[in-house]
Image 1 (cartoon, one colour):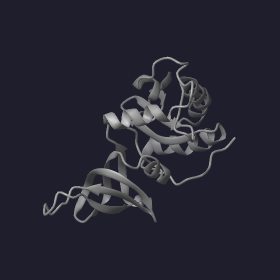
Image 2: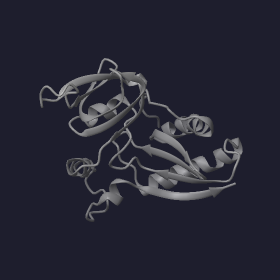
Image 3: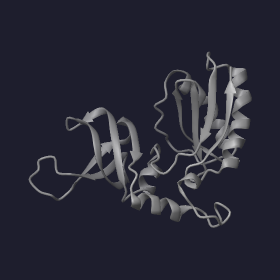
Image 4: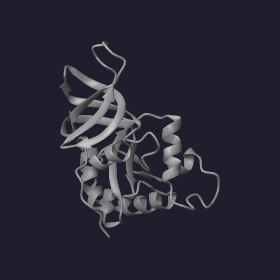
Length: 202
């Protein structure tokens, strides 16, 4: 089983970059998409999701079982590390054009690798994705009017983008969960942001 190929903002470096290169085809064959790989101290985090944005604890554990032996054999991380597999969560990173389309209307923070109009950081409301640009409404930088201004920033020049946690975002995330997700129990943030098995490797 493979997922549809779509350009991902790949900003990993060093060991995380090598892990991402190993993880993407494995995840695709399992029907998942890589969101990002991050090294934070001894923790190696692989963040993934299904094409519909969901990712269960069982999914986390399946990815952990698939990746652990590969990472052991390839030995891409020289020091002892702790493997953590998780979902993107509610205030998720946005890494594909479809992410920016899917979450249009919600608040977002965008950091640029290359300045746009002299700025490298933007916060506003997503309008969507069009012709290689992420479009968002921001406060008028000139201050001449309170009306927000629509701008476009090149997708390829984004270093980081993520949703801003708001009540509206939480409700929207809950509404997107498949029927029966969480076995009928009350849905909370822990069910929207899953973190599965954690393995120590060294």
